[in-house]
Structures are given as C-alpha cells and as structure tokens.
Amino acid sequence: MFRKQPLLVSTVLLKSTEKLLHSFSRRNVSKRNYLSRMYLLPPSKLRDTGLTSKSQNLFLHNEILFPCHNGAFYYLPLGLRALEKLTRLIDEELQSIGAQKISMPTMVTAALWKKTGRWGTDELFKLKDRHLTEYCLGPTHEELVTSLVAQFERLSYKRFPLMLYQITRKFRDEMQPKFGLLRGREFEMKDLYTFDLDEETARETYSLVCDTYHTIFHRLQLNYMKVEGATGNIGGKMSHEYHLPASIGEDSLFICDKCGFGSNIELIDEQNQSEDVACPQCQSAMKIQTGIEVGHAFLLGTKYSEVLNAKVTNKEGKRITTEMGCYGLGVSRILQAGVEVLHDGESIRWPRLIAPYQVAILPQKSQDSGPFLKLSDELYDRLCSLPSLRHDVVIDDRVDRTIGWRKNQLNRQGFPYIIVVGKKCQEDPAQYELIDTYSGTTDFLSLDQLIDTLSMLHTL
Ligand SMILES: [Zn+2]
Image 1: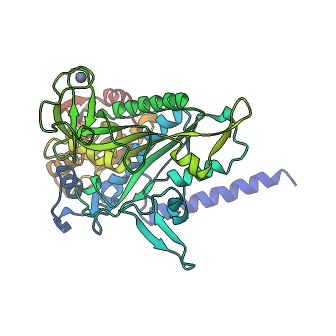
Image 2: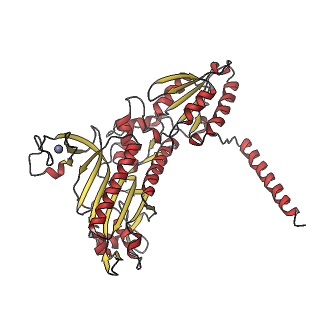
C-alpha cells in the first residue's frame, strides 16, 4: 500500500509537467531567448530633451533605456541585464572581503536625519504619511545603518570589522537632471558602511575597500582616477573620489602624471586654480582633467556613531564608540559612464563582462529560413550547455530583416560576439562565421572550433 504512494506522486508530477509543456507551446512561449519576442521599443518614438550625452543617446537609440519623466528612465530588458550583471560583479567582490549584503527601507524618518543635522539638506524628496510623520526618500543611509548597529547591545569586538552594504534605488531632487543615468533623480547605488574599533583599524578597512574598488574597475577594464576629495555634507576625516576621465565630466581634477597623485579642484581653493599648480607630493606641474565621479570613500570617524550611539564592547570589556567608514559606488552611473568612455562613436561598447548577452546567433534570411532557424536552435542549445554561456545567448530570429540590417543593429547594441548561421553551415564540413564586434575580426570555424573558442569566455 505504501509502495504505491511514490508512483502516484510521480504520475501527478509527470502530468503537470506535460501540462506545463503544452501550455508553453500553446502560448508560443519558449525557454530560448528569441529577439523577436523581446520587448524592444523602436527608437523613432524618442523625443530629444536636450542636455544629452553620447552614451545617453546610444542607450536611447538602441533599446537599452526609454525615457519616462524628467530625470527618470525605463530600463528595457537589455539595459536591466547589464545593470544586474554589474550588480553581481560588485556583490562578488564585496562579499569576497567579508561585506554582508542587507536591504534598508527606501523611506527614512525625518527624526533620524534631524538628529544628525542633515534634514535641511537640499535635494531631499520629502513626504508625509497619514499620521503626518515626515520622511524622505533615502539618498544615502548613514543614519539608518548606524541606528541598526546601535540596536545590537551585545555587539562584540570579535565581529569587527563589521561591513554592511546594500545596492538599492536612491533618490535626489536634482535641480536639472541631465546626461541620462549620469545625473538622474533616481539611481542605483551601492552603499557600504564599515564599523571598526579604533581609527587605526578603520584606516586598514579603508585601504581594503579601496583595493576592492581597484579590482572592480580592473575587471570592468575601466581606467579610473582616484583623487583626494572634499568631505562636504557627509563629513569625516578623509575622502577619496573615483572618476572616469571624460570630457562631459562635471568635476575638474588636478592629476600628477609623474607620481599619480590627484585631487579634486575644490581642494585647491586658495592657490591659483587655473595653472601651474605643483604636486604636493613630487612638486611636478599637475594637469587638469575632467572626470565623471563614479565612486566615493569616506573615513567618517565617530560623527554618526556618537550621535546615534553605535557602541561596541572592546577586548578590555569597555564600551567604546565605533569608528565608521562609508563607501559609495554609483552603479547606474558606472553603467552609462563605462559606455561613455568605451563607445566607438556609432556603437555601444560595454565593459565586456557586463554586456547584456555575450553571443547573438544570426540565422540567414532566405526563401525558406526554416533550416537556418533549426540549425540556430541546435547551436543555441549546444552553447547554453557550456556553464559560462548558460544564460548569455540570444537568437536574432527576425528573419524578415536582412542579415546586414540585423548585424548592424546587434553591433550597435554592443553584443560582443555574433555567429552567422548561413549557407556555409549547410556545407560539409559546416563553417560558422564568428564576428568579434569589439575588435572587428571575423573567423570561419567548424562547430568544434566555435565551441572551443566560446567556452573560454569569461562571463558573470
Ligand atoms: Zn606628483
């Protein structure tokens, strides 16, 4: 009697699977990624709002973003995939140094911001609930995270350094949003907060996070400039900014080519800012360079932990105030700034690791495209069986369009690899045309060679 039970279960399972498969085919839903089914909006519907940058135009004209209201955008499927990959890369690197991911509320009570004296800050989106309690949409979360750590009364020194971060949507009421994701009113930000026992260990944590930022930009193949920055509204003892060099950058930086020292021009106030500023480290003349700020690090000291009472019991059993650091990365800003520095004029060039998809399969247009579509499906399944490419392949099955039109489109959208499935694939031996769009090279490869080449790709 009991033996029959599992059989019964498996029959039920089988039936439900059949039903699922049936509904898949009936509703024309497939597990393969076909571009014909992806929600891509034709660029003709775009309106030019002025205040635009090259990367923003490339995003708007190539189905990455779609404009919504002032300073806000829809991420279309390709754009969101790139953003999620970037998020994954940052998660990997931060978690490799022991940072723990949390998520804090978007709405922050005014009471906390009043305590730290920041409620008067411009650019806060303020709101009230039905009980007339005041909130703001969080642009940054020092107050919330510090008050979270303060709740933990028995917090032991053994847990230190304590590193908590989140990657969430942040808000800022910009006077004049511009350049797309570079200066929007909503943006994705990674904010990391660190807690240490004393200033010395807090400085060690500071260099650890800076090293991690280096790794992140290195993996993205983005050259960056790290410069001394002002502590401004956040406050604290020391700060560095991370910039990508670009002509549309809104920050002016003094950079010393000789020793690598850099500083935001804001810090060189009293001296002559326009020319002949000597490097404070090696006395060489520094040059001025504009940059897009993509990251920031602050050694905060006890500014927040003191007010919000974040204490820890040290080795000697004494209650002491924690030493804090906070570290931001503009995730959506890096997404667009990366393209601002890498694009080739006509086409999006992503940092390769975060391209929405690594490979697009392109079946030929023909009187009867059936055989090319079938070969493409088979190639798709084969590529997706490679662990590195499992989620990174699409088929551009819009065979009513010429191959030239689609190739051009995929190139402009920044697909790093295009495989053309054409007449040569029907020959014996079959030949696949592999185009590396970023280097502009083309190779004709057998199926095995093709698989070998693509199995070596680094993906996220
Ligand atoms: Zn120097």
